[in-house]
Image (cartoon, rainbow, N blue to C red):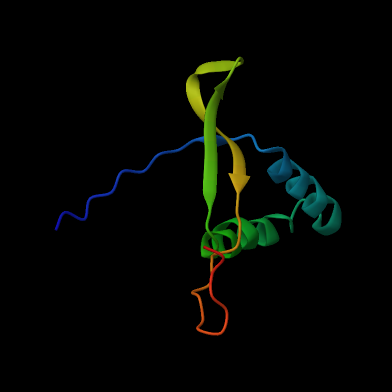
Length: 86
């Protein structure tokens, strides 16, 4: 099995990420915003079904950007007492 992985770096331009940064900066100051920000984006969100919406923008026509981060909760397995809708 080949364990080589390719790493890609993309700019994240999601409005909610910027709003979270500004809120944490206001709450924790310049020295304290990073730890709660990383907690959210490196530990909490990957435990959910993380979806990255990618695209290009007029300002960066040749560069793929992460336009939005979508993170619905993971679906729980069905139990015998609660069947699915379909």
